[in-house]
Image 1 (cartoon, rainbow, N blue to C red):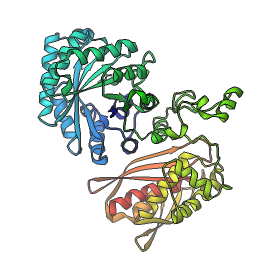
Image 2 (cartoon, helix red, strand yellow):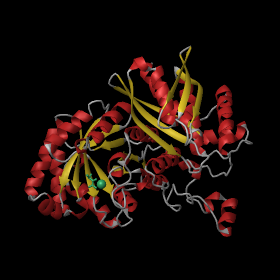
Image 3 (cartoon, helix red, strand yellow):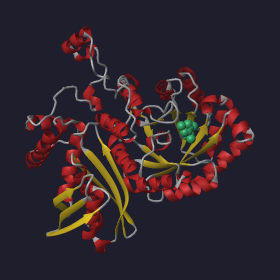
Image 4 (cartoon, helix red, strand yellow):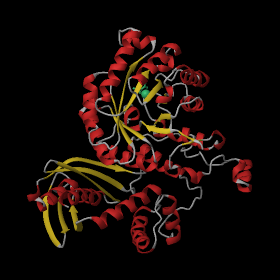
Amino acid sequence: MDDKVYIFDTTLRDGEQAPGNQLNMIEKLEVARVLEELGVDIIEAGFPISSPGDFESVVQISKTVTNPTVCGLTRAIQKDIDVAADALRYAKHPRIHTGLGTSYNHIYYKLKSTPEEIIRRGVDAVKYAKKYVEDVEFYCEDAGRTDNEYLARVVEAVIAAGATVVNIPDTTGYCLPTEYGEKIKYLMEHVSNIHKAIISTHCHNDLGMATANSVLGVLNGARQVEVAINGVGERAGNTALEEVVMALKSHPALNIHTDIVTPNIMRASKMIQRLMKSPVQANKAIVGKNAFAHSSGIHQDGVLKHRENYEIIDPKDVGVDESSIILTARSGHAALKYRLQLLGYPLEGEELDKTYQDFLKMADAKKIVNDDDLLILVGKDKKKRERIISIEQLQVVCGNSMIPTATVSLKVKDEVKTETATGNGPVDAAYTAVKKIFAENNIRLQEFLIQGFNGGCDDSGRVSVQVECNKHFYQGLGVDTDIVTASVEAFVDAISKALE
Ligand code: KIV
Ligand code: ZN
């Protein structure tokens, strides 16, 4: 029987706190859903006391996901723990992640304290968090630079206080792989109650060694790794989820597995690149554009003779379709079906026919339809059929010498309702017309976000909105090559949910 390593994803906490990576609520919920489908065990959803936005995202993610544990970060301070417990109240499996610095620098210069006082504060924080939740993780910040003997005392004390997981962060990305591995080994051998908790790695990539350090941690006894998709995070980032997972999977002799659904890796990676507007380098391990591209003649020849001559991972195993079928308006059902299957949507019969018709319309407008477009198409198609409101007709006139005016006809259940309105632009005019149709329903637009996918003026626009109706919030998504249509689709999607 092989051992399981738990995957603790901190894309939405440590990853999101890096400059430029901030996500809005709609985006965070999308990430949480994809992480759940990826099979992560724990989602660190935020640092609830740090801002109302972080608090709310922990609340909303707790309501959204079912299988993963949802975790909120705190300092070893009672108020932080109270707020985290409140944010986690809807989580099916809540975890509080509390802790404080244990290195010489942190104890004396950051916390202005003493080693004994730090142990006392750590123990108190764990005991306090235990009043709210059973699952309490403790982090020894800057453990990478903490003296091992002292670290073992801290770990033993917090486990005795009830910590279920103890995190050994290499906060500054300082350790060498052998050094980090030895640190974990030391703890496994010198902490008397170590079997009562799981030891976790949390490695930063300042010296480019986060993956190596995490793997060495696992080889020496850690059974949880803290990671982020594409390795996003503070400074040089956190450990990349896809790298650790595939390193363990590619070495079956280690007898260690994770529950990650690896064919979903590429999809998760692309989503983070798009939402954080942070493309990975072409030669990034596992998810880079060239990770499975063979350009030299010798390699091409070798791969064609036998794939494993030059590939240690089957690209399909991480969701990369190695075939270069390009989908255009001339592609048939079979090509679309094959591509959708690779993306995890095995459509058949009527559903495939319907999606194919939508695909043809998109291919006419976009020329080349890529995987992101297909995902939109499938999501969009499903949503449309479930909705109680659909767009019958949308007409907009706008330009630099007229007042933008929109006429919107919506089918609400079986009745068609039409309104016309003006606005400061075509989207505003169309939204004002929609609001007139639902004037009695107390609908208020709270957030609106429009994004392109791949660049280019023929790109699909993706619009995400959040509306408020009677103090409840509803998200809507719309995608179309026409951005006004995408915007109205998103609005109507959210209103449908509000009125259902
Ligand atoms: O890097 C670190 O030490 C952290 C802790 C707060 C867990 O992110
Ligand atoms: Zn960190």
